[in-house]
Length: 78
Image (cartoon, rainbow, N blue to C red; front, side, top):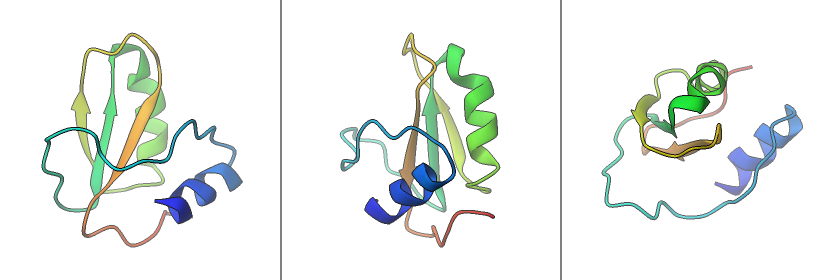
């Protein structure tokens, strides 16, 4: 998680928190992007760097996007 966060920061993203997944959701594959209705556009942009990640729409009121890394994650796309 630290490495992915640092890579995202190098690309200009703001990383608010680095932590283990606090939910009970099982993440498979590359990972999952979690966001609320206001974050749909931002999630689309983040997905360019995490191709193959699933998406999960939740009820958060902010435009913040959570990047949850899955077991098949390799590296961010260039």
